[in-house]
Length: 118
Image 1 (cartoon, rainbow, N blue to C red):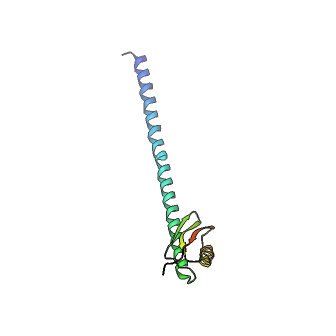
Image 2 (cartoon, rainbow, N blue to C red):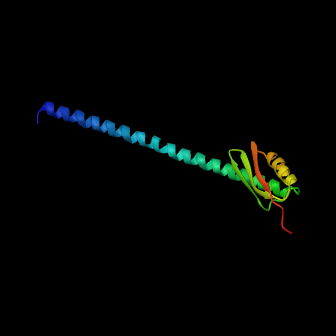
Image 3 (tube, helix red, strand yellow):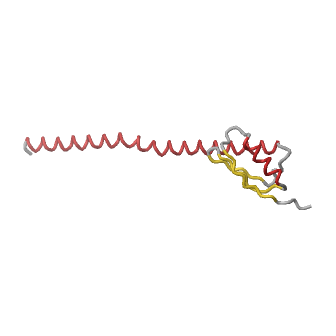
């Protein structure tokens, strides 16, 4: 092999090594994005769950609301009340109680009135 051939080979090998090094360095940064997004999503779910529990607890403490058939869902501070209560006054009371919980930005009351069978 001639000197010129050896120099060309050295340039090609050097370029390939440089590209490989760039590729190796780029991979960790790219792989962190999904992990960060997953961590963030997990934190949001945990915050939603904590808010749901806080609203359920507040509703349970309020004697004006029968929470037997009430479910609570939270998404980024917005709370939805689902299920049924025996009378309209309890629908209104449930909204008032949920609005008073720290972290609740809005309440969507989807409760229905369903009389309790005697």
